[in-house]
Image (cartoon, rainbow, N blue to C red; front, side):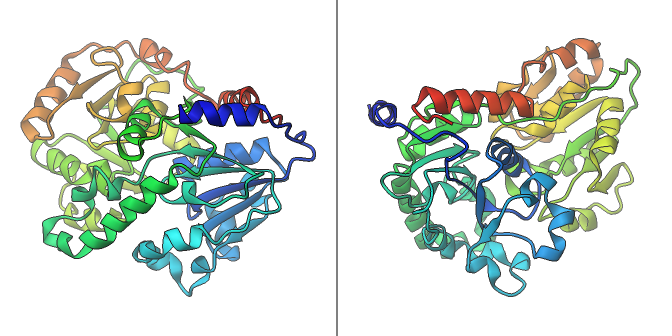
Amino acid sequence: MFTGEVKEQLLSMTMKKRSNLRVALVIDSLFKMAGGERVLESFAQMFPQADIFTLFSPPARKRKKLLSEEILSHKIYTSALGRWPFISHYYRYTLPFWPLYIEKFDFSQYDLVISSSWSVAHGIVTPLECKHVTYVNTPMRYAWDQYSKYFSKKRGRWKYSFFFNSLRIWDSSVSSRADLMIANSNFVSDRMKKYWDREADVVIFPPVSKYSGEILLKRSSYFVAGAPFEENKGGDFLFECAKWIGFHLKVIGRGSKKKFFEKKYRNCKNIEFLGWIDEKEKFDILSKASGYIMTGVEDFGIFPVEALSCGTPVLAYGFGGILDTVRNNENGVLFFEQTIDSFKNALLEFKNRKWNYIDVAKSVEGMNSGEDFRKKVEAFLVDNGINI
């Protein structure tokens, strides 16, 4: 098997110790601290001397507000594409250039490259003697199974067909470039097999910051949703459910369609858009909520795990990475059709259930903290002949 051959090659090589190992870290973009960026942060902690490469990053004057201190402590190389004027306002429209520019990075001075990929970062080109390990947050959703969500018929899907056919060919072909692949969930592992015909070498769940406070037994009547502002996250459906059913919904976070939804649902007094909040306030809101709601398809779903760690049960669409963390009628309720009736029935079942909030919190005790994640990645690298 291909991955077995790769392992044998790696095992036959003697890598340098971490003190001398020249390491580069790669990510698609660095505009905010989302899931893929948290993974990168953990890699940066593992390799304090590593350089970081990315297609896009904020201007130097804005980095302190958007990126963690750990990431900022590393040297960051941004592609020429990322230096175009005002690129943060239109970078999504430069997608046709992403494969070209990700391949331009030069890794000839490095022994090990680790990428955190949700788009094209896994497609970097490394020298023969340089090992490439990629952590796959997801194969491109918008190129594969969720293409119709991102590009509807109303948006002239036919106009993009030729480009995305080419992008799929590129994406599938470059999946062979990495020496080792780590999937962030079983769902992502299945997608890798289907669209890339490449088995993940291992599944390691991403690092999650879990609640450490008291599990509250008395809850407020509101529900929480985390940043449902991208096409895969089901915001359109969620807000329609809130509008017609009338439950109190607090929405945390930012995203590309946030302003659109705020304007569309500005007359729905039961929907609160809280925007970006700090970690303390986030966990305060989650720990007092009746439940957390997720109506889209997540690759893993860090927000729901954070909610569960507060003892807050989850009401979710039963497809995708959520199945790695939510067990129906144990720490949450799943619905299986994205219709208002299906959601309404699940919500009624959710409200009628007497939840043991302490047991709900215990259900995610085994999820990876940052330290757990780093230990598992280190063990995986060592097992495959990379002596770090």
